[in-house]
Image (cartoon, rainbow, N blue to C red; front, side, top):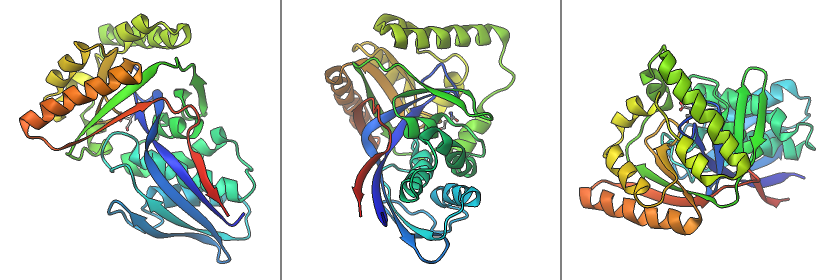
Length: 309
Ligand code: HSE
């Protein structure tokens, strides 16, 4: 195997009640990454299309995660990487995670898969760290493992998949403003008061229970965020209006995707998700804001191989 082309998907982190510890992998939206073996050792980023990003391997997240993998692995060749960005950086749907997880997934395939997808998380996290200033594993774990993921302890990589009720679908609205994860993280207030801690942990426990029981009503009652959303939502134009439209049109929940500015509505079924998409589109058009909109079911598999040579 000399060359591999993969699809590395977008993801939603936090899912309201699980700041830094819950994530879900999406379908259709994502980056395509090509990695080739080279005689010359080391990592080179040949080109990035779709977005303006650095080719410097020490600054591009795909290069940083790939270097972390190579540092720990004995290989007698090098790798060149081409990244075709389908996800806009600073959108809140895991742009840096798709690139940093994608490069290590592809290299792992080319060297005979010495690492499991779960073991690749630690390398992908090195890329995520330089993008957001913190090693939060919610996005990279969702991309590498697929489905809903839970990060119990990111330092010791105690990370696992959760049950995925088959009927869940997401609408994602991306207002065309860039919110840097590092800046959005700096806004988050500490410490959290005891009453908020109680509410947030009650919702998190109930949400996970809802996923396993496939109890859509319980999922809906618990996908709420009393800690982060009240602060970060100020950055998102008409957040409360978008939430109201979604929740009054059968959305099970509505919140900020990752660190924003994207927002998500979670629905039962793609038909509901598409209908909410049309309504949110209508509202943003009326207000004259630029945006992208996506609908997606849950991607159970994570990164997909497109072609191998
Ligand atoms: N959990 C991270 C945050 C995700 O909300 O800051 C960033 O995409």
